Amino acid sequence: MSEEQNEEQQFVDILWEDGSTVKCEVYDVIDFENKTYALLLPLEDEDNDEDTELIVMEYVEEDEDNAHFQTIEDEDEFNRVCEYINSLEEEYEDDEEE
Image (cartoon, rainbow, N blue to C red; front, side, top):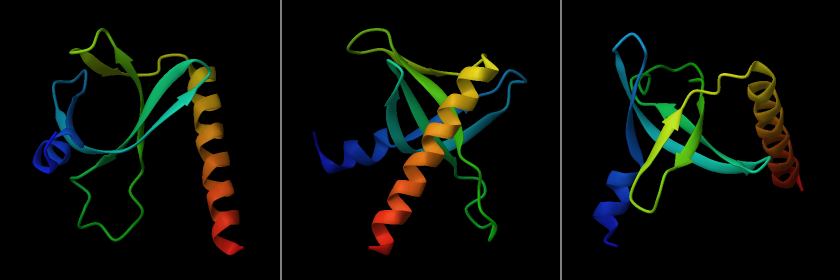
């Protein structure tokens, strides 16, 4: 796989239910509770000095060639995933301080 292909694969367009799209960088992909989740960073807010919020979506592989992102509908599942992500950030920050 060429470097150019890698760069292209790091960006996705997310289509919302209202028909709008947001171009995002795939910031990270994590496995949690037997599922895979993607952390997406919207690119529209690049020039914004404030912290941009990540979008968390489930990453679903249908087969080798087909995959998609889907909204996490279950609020409890979404909260557990967010707590896990926050714990990873805290671990990273602790490691940086040492």
